Length: 429
Image 1 (cartoon, rainbow, N blue to C red):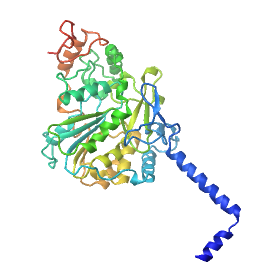
Image 2: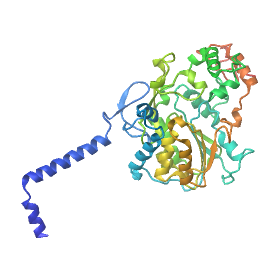
Image 3: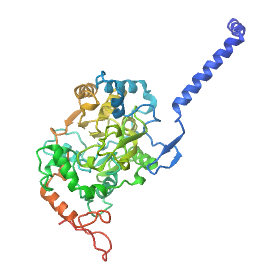
Image 4: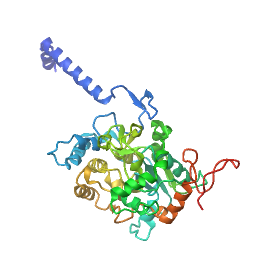
């Protein structure tokens, strides 16, 4: 020990100063990497405030969203590299960032709808588990805790009210004057109602948009829903609400689903025309004819893998439905790498080839969790739940009722609303 100490004392002072300087530079780099650039976040109202990121929201911006990744990928580089890059980022992220088990010991039934759209899939778990084609018999005979994510601020106000109705807090089921469509194929089923029965899909969409212009333009975001505090509280409920609820319980999360490689905020272009054909688009890809600054949005991103890992256990029966416009590649790759795919019992997936190689992704999922039940939208179910069956006669009644009122003053419901002395909107039969 004395010899070693003597050698240390004998080290020239310039070497000691060099070592101290290198340590200082290293420490500074670590702090810069961990702390956001300005310590502030921005809500939909445009205000700046001290950062209060919700648990499991993505960290300060370090990487770009898969949409932007694809935009900046070299032309000669295959798109499947997006998935490999996501896996590499996930592998580089310490697993210790989140516990690999939730905090509830009593088993629960969980349904997570990543992409609720017009709430026409929020009760899909009933069809998957108890419908005529149900083959998975391990679900507990107990109600479900349901969590639904939706990124589009123009849909979020409707979804918020719909979840309140599902929870028994509203008497009347919320109704919209727009077809509750999640794809062009769904929209086409309503085309005859509006006189837009065209064989060409583009002509059909243009016709529908023209017929629905009044009601599309009436859609408005609710800035109160773009709140970090609100989202944090609702995310936390998954860890705090242990044991089965007395009846199905629905929690709306007005945020986008993402993973550790995503920014804390997602910026995208969400014009109302997109909302009846499914999915919004990145601002860079918006056609000039549709470009309108009113529909540039920023919404919170929930780190889905970390939230799942910290909220649920393998004793829970978890059904995950995912339709997130390509982000499923990064999310599922991270779940595989972190070893948490075993939390999911049933996975209903709409895989988008624009985000990576779907066959490779599903192979990775199956390898990580051989007993998982994989469902494909359009094959194993129709893409909407049995409560939201597409019915042209019912939509014709909606369209007729919607002609009778100004959407800027009234909303449609199954019964007239407002004081008795005030004329309400036309009611559905």
